[in-house]
Image (cartoon, rainbow, N blue to C red; front, side, top):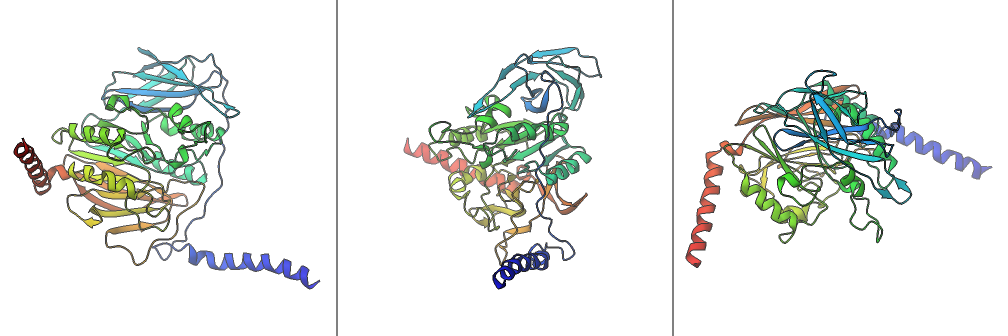
Length: 449
């Protein structure tokens, strides 16, 4: 009898301790805010016919084209997009290509990719996919500043994901940037389909530009050694247009802003293809035409959260100097399920000519928040909070941008961190030091000759 009572009391006592201690464990920077727990995963079902497009999303291609991607269950679906500037009136038509893949016992639907254009800037277009009667619409980004990015990492497909997406969609933006960890399928391929459906209402209306995270790898010894099979098939980005040989790293330009997407899980040392590509890409940037340079990657180079400590360090050591010498303005990362903003940094020290580093891996993933930060706080870390949310980078003009981090506080998006950012292209001191380095390097070469 005593043994039975002991077995009964232990779980009751554990539950009591969890209830009593959770508010203290989950306490936020705000004394009146209780940290929100993870929420359930949402599996979005397919409710259309086999020929109808599903999982529709768009991405930028070059300065005036857009790639439309979707999936059909039927292998007879056509890779055709009709489009125009009025509902139901399509004076443009483009044909693309399709692909599919197998992953163990899973066979994907027919994955279509069609590039349309040239398109006019800041214009709403209406379009259909594969001859279906269902009409979608999107708005192209502006040709000139101002420009607004929505930024969200580690999205997943939970009730928190839905909350983040609703908050993002409630305020207009031009392009969404996602620094890795999309579906959290983790080899369970139907979750890729479900993710495509949950984001379609948003990703079909504005271009989504993404890079890969660790949850996209999905490698398996011998059978799938290189990984990224589903990611590369479904989320094709404009890598070829930027001179890259891999969908896992690329760049694009939009309205005076050069955006670089790096791959944390691809070779990045000085002898790698990615490193050489990054060198060449940075060398091509004309800061008079594109005064802003933004970089995204998955594993953060700077991080005071106790989660994933040091995982981006080898990449930082390999590539940080390239970004610093190019006077990159901002570096966004994901991976750590929290928000953190640093001052301008180079080589672990505050530097007015270094990028602002931000971690924004708080989109709504199923694994929950990374609650613990190192203490005492580093003077380099200006704001940190383990809450779900997303960010907004509004590039106002050639010299100034405004950043805001929006916390998901239940049904409300609360702006908890915001600041003005000045482009390094407008800093005479920083540009002067770069020019001086280039002159010194050139002089050294001439002396050797």
